[in-house]
Image (cartoon, rainbow, N blue to C red; front, side, top):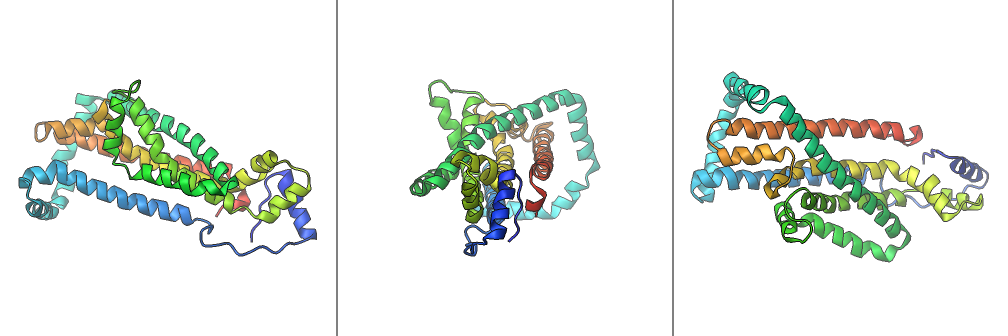
Length: 312
């Protein structure tokens, strides 16, 4: 087992361990390092593919096939051979570039990107505070693990558009960004909560016992040993939830919110009129690029805030 002291208490704990080694049970499969970070992205990709397929059918295939499911999928498969030609169509790229630079303007696009970032950042702040606090509580009071995890799991299964629309009728929320912020916060609870519980559960109990031996209080052990050692796993949960929210936040304009989803909404409403496709591609590409930039930022933050001994 690799030990990485990151505080004076951690160093004292490891010195105590070197004098009086205590056997520890092998880590269970549930607490295996990296399990959550592998499972959640796979589930997220599967969910994203499913949502994309449903949205594609509702907005494109259903219209083309006149409510004929079989005909709709036939239309989809018939269009697959045309994809290479679409990707190499220089006129289409030129039209899209002209729309962004001259008709919409880079300033307006950047403003929408900032609105999207603000929407996601605000929801992630509330979700992180609530989820980490709940994770610490679950780690201390095991009886709460089942109920709280169950509630968080149910929240993630609610259709996003339905949850966004629900808050319109709630007094004090209505149309705007408040409803999407609450909805995005609720969607982010499960990944962060589960990773917090898993990260705290991975901390070697012998180190905690040694910290008790040097006189650290429960709060000091949590702040100086448990949370720092669990931080890489917790950060992975925040990272996954943030990337999920960047995509889900595109629904916000449908309920009066802001963000890059407005381009997709306008493009669908105008299709097949002029600039409809350009609007949709602007929203999609900008959202994807934003997710890539945020992912890189999280990788840098993780490297800067994680002890060298804990880096994989």
